[in-house]
Length: 362
Image (cartoon, rainbow, N blue to C red; front, top):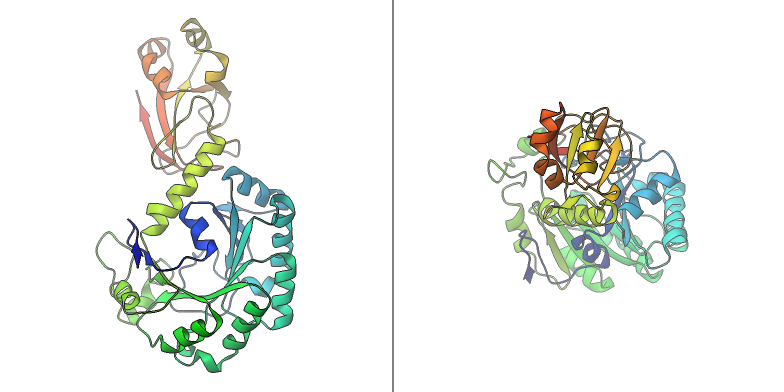
């Protein structure tokens, strides 16, 4: 087994996971409607059982929103999730075709489902361009999965040329039936570290689960359950991976695509720049600051943890403000303040309406 810095381990990674490790997968949440009511479901109240669409954290109102989000992070693929995506099959097929038509066949698309779709439904997904499917059977079917409809569905998916596997939370269980089935169809097993969220914490505690420690959302015992599984294509995805690897790498990709000449990209993929409020253009020009090193802004910026008005990445600030390199703002801070300007350095996520991580006034 290989192990990464986040605590994940694997002897096999499906293509969807390989791209995820690079931060190159856009997450397309196609609906919050599900009805399964799994006790461990971590989906937020904002999305749970609501028929809404998000591309990463961006609400989707039109097709252009999906394409723009994919372009902003230079996505090499998309993971389709929910809720239960296949309750909105036409919508799923529409987005698969949209992405394949825009980015080509190499744009890898995988999908999660808790259903066991028949060959006709799987055929429509394959025809639309789906590359990989991950089945999520209920916990009470895992031990005898070889005698359920999931076996037929996984076999049908493989016959259609789809990469197929099972993805479930890592909870102590009898994995022998799963491993036998996956060996038969050459499928993979993804085990996700069980995590506490605002929507599942009560149910997890009812069943005896407890947080690993005071700073982790991971459930104690989840990793140990995964370590007991011995299969030829197994991947354990740790709780810390999502922040330590997946989110950080995605932010870095987005920052590289959207940063302006004067933005500094941090190791965490955030953008740092200066904001000057007040009549400062003459001071900047007298100091030799060229036109490509600042921009005018008329929109509002909030405090740490808030987001500004809709606009291009980083193009928000106090009314009548100028955005520039943080070091230019710092070098000219004294002169600017004497002229009645206020000067701050902003660190924010490089996404549309990105959250402000830190605001430091001079």
